[in-house]
Length: 338
Image (cartoon, rainbow, N blue to C red; front, side, top):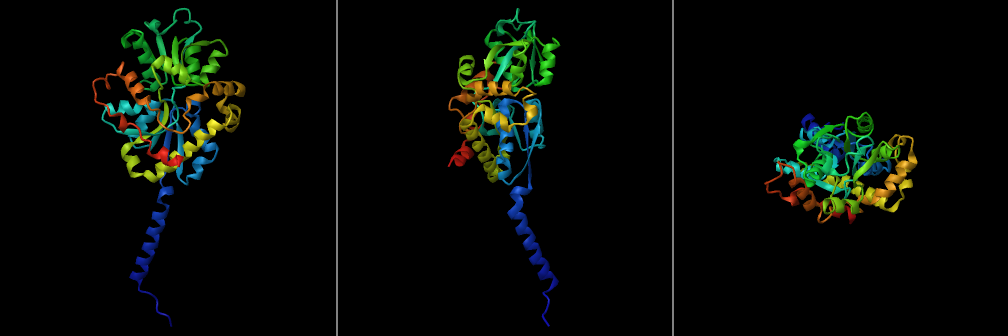
């Protein structure tokens, strides 16, 4: 008769097998939450496109995408530990470092904001440039958001102090449109497809255009890296394999954008993203597709331009010794390109 192994030996063996199974599946077992500052915005198109193309699924990671209308609210969620990363604007990494928080962009989606300041039809007779913002109400996605940052900079550039106008958080998309058509705001900064939805009906006109690299360089003095995936530096350093998989998926997506037409890209997006006017969505994407980076690499002069913009008005940044090299990394993008 065959002797059974001692119970203690059996349990030790079972425990070893369980721990091995856990270790080999740990990378895919941990849920990774990425909050997007408005999933339907064209500036954040690479995120949804990566999901639709199956690139995020190919990572083998349990990734959940959540949409939050304002980037500043997404930052709060990330810092609280409710999310591992935010798809938002790079300028938050500098603002957060000035406030003692270390986060970094791990893949750069765009080299231009992809936004514009719109003026309502009724206010257009009185607002011809940012110099006319005095006494006006300006719409932004949220207080402390990137649209707020850029609006404040453009106002200060034209000699208008923050105290001389009112900023009103109105979100994006339908809520922004409602605020403008209901005359709650005189002007405001928003993105596509909201820009085209308002200008096509004559409800608004473009005052400052930041949708392309050329227009951005003229308005801000250089490339302005906007949309990116940024994460807490400590989490990046302790989860390099996961970060690499995510970045590789997004680098593949950026390559897809470069090699496919706006029509082909639009065909991959959910119908509710273009609000029953697909051609308008295609046209706006075609006109501003060059805002996306070709490979996820941070534009060489971009961080300095962003710091210069923030120094123009942001009291949290002014006078601080900002280490720009800590606000982004190219480590994962370069590995993905290989």
